Image (cartoon, rainbow, N blue to C red):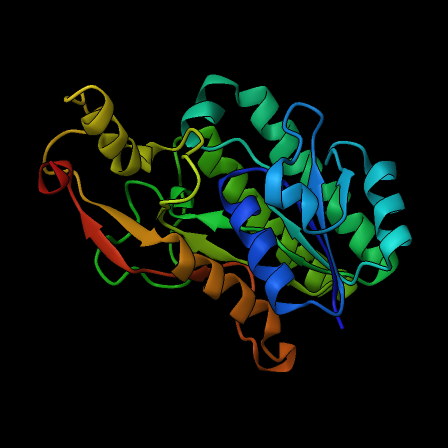
Length: 253
């Protein structure tokens, strides 16, 4: 039996992950953690427990962990790339300050933690073909900086305190269920909505710019599969490269 807390359950990944885990772990508790500005609705609210879980409030998170005897935390709270660049101070506060809170709670209460990283953790000097697992990471965005720092902080908590931390570097995620939430790769979904509603789309990405993408069901499977893996067999933890497909705007158009 697993008791899971998903912080950021009402976001693009969080809502679909919550429903997937509730289907797979019906004999446990999958708690939908949310912020006041984004409360759960519909099936997400009706299918299981939900709690106010502001990642910047460590006491609030710790109380939920105690109440539901949480053993696994999926930390999905973050500003996505485009939003983070517009609000870099808030991106750091949530991305790193929030992660620190979660890791401290996990250290004290024995929880495993999944925190997604991103291909945004790479930079101009990162090898683009067959990108190595361990490679140069010098991003030029606040989003990328927080992801690199998050990988290092999670590794530190595993090596220093034995916290079971795990992560993957997600590409852009494509979903037919939830709308994108402010990432650089969002055009790959937004273009379809614009085509239907307005008959046109002005793409912010230049023609010929290839970016890695992945369908949401594959991303969710990767997260759950990694968290179910035998920890003694993990060589890397924070964070695994993961890939699916790559295309450029004119191909979708």
